[in-house]
Length: 142
Image 1 (cartoon, one colour):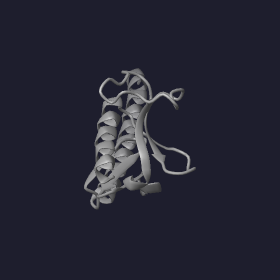
Image 2 (cartoon, helix red, strand yellow; image 1 turned 135 degrees about the horizontal axis):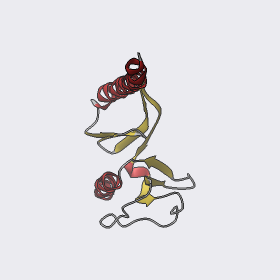
Image 3 (cartoon, rainbow, N blue to C red; image 1 turned 135 degrees about the vertical axis):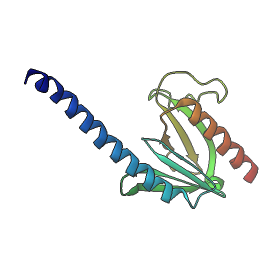
C-alpha cells in the first residue's frame, strides 16, 4: 500500500503532462489550418505570424484558432526593429548581434501618428531572422 501511495503523485504528474501536451497539440493543429494561406508563417506560444505578399498578420494562438488577429501592409510601415526586454523601447537591437537573454519583440512602426505594434517571440534568434526578412521585404516594396 505504501508503494501505491508513492506512485500516486507520479501518476498525477503524468496525467497533467498528457493534458498539457494535448492542449498544445490542438493549438498547433489550429495554427496549421490558419497558416495554409500564407507564404511564410511562424508559431510559438506567444504569437503566430503570417506573411502573404506585402501583408503581415499576427495574433495569439489558442485551441480554437488565432484570436485577436491584427494585420498591416508592409507598405504602411516606416521601419521594423528588434527589441529585447521591456526597457529597450527606444533602443533597437542590432539584427546580427542581438543579446542572448531577454524577451524579444518585433516592433512595427507605422506611418503617421499610429502607435508602434509589438509582436512577441520566444527566441531571440528567430525574432532577429524574421525581423531581417520582413525589413528586407519592406525596403524592396518601397
